[in-house]
Amino acid sequence: MEQDPRYNNNEWNNNNFPQQPYQPTIIVGEREQKGSSNLAVTSLVLGILAILMSIFLFWAFYIAFVMGAIGLIMGIVSIAQHREGKGMAVAGIITSAIGLLISLVLGFLIILGLAMMAA
Image (cartoon, rainbow, N blue to C red; front, side, top):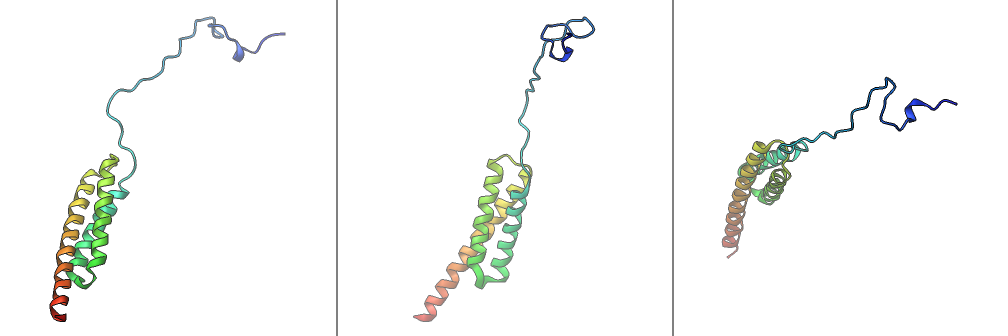
């Protein structure tokens, strides 16, 4: 009974030539960027909305504050995870920080104005 050549464990292939030994492929270089730019885009959009809401809907400063804080966190996480869209993440961090600061200042002024009216 003849043995199946696929299960032949010697070093010779079917053409009676020695097989090349297995050599693993080693890739040296920079790590590929992983993930998508969803966090960076979301950070940028939330930052822009926080700025616009702080300026035009100043009475809803607390919503702008929350959106700016979430946008700031998402931008930092996007950069920390080395995702694509680093420029957008930086822009998202900047716009979120600006929106956060504007909402803080306007919130302080609104609360201060309400306290002065009550006194």
